[in-house]
Length: 197
Image 1 (cartoon, rainbow, N blue to C red):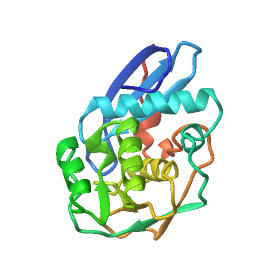
Image 2 (image 1 turned 120 degrees about the vertical axis):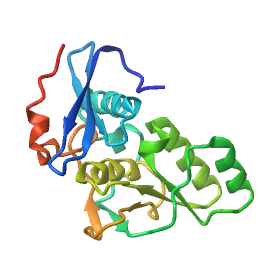
Image 3 (image 1 turned 90 degrees about the vertical axis):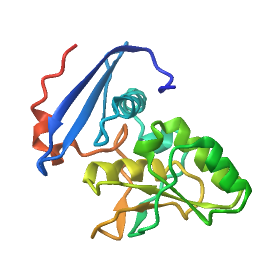
């Protein structure tokens, strides 16, 4: 399920990042003309489209994603280096693990789980069982960290964090810009994409 908007057009484009990795970038154009953008490094175009739809909706309302989703504004989100594996995207296993007190912290890769709704549902389950939640930026790319920061700001409580499995700043600021808050200019090739309409 994507963001609750009337989408006029979607375009997904493959691009080569400065690191040499391949990424998919998506642009969603709403019926009112507002554009939103998303990306993924795991080659699942659905993730990029979902992010772009939520970005477009937040931009159309001139609010950051965390405000659109009822999150409380945090100045920053803590980054940690955690080598424990993230929980694979399997609802049945996650539910059994939560009910069986298997987790002290839910380590979730939002790019593997695929949508803002799924992350929100997992966050609600974590809150109901007094579990912390950590969002994995699997490739430690700045865009991933920024997206995880935007999602973490939507999660209730102050114990949500971002897992970055490399050297990274201990805190990342939560963007107050409308939309998802990703600084697209960090990858110059993004500005060169010729989006179709």
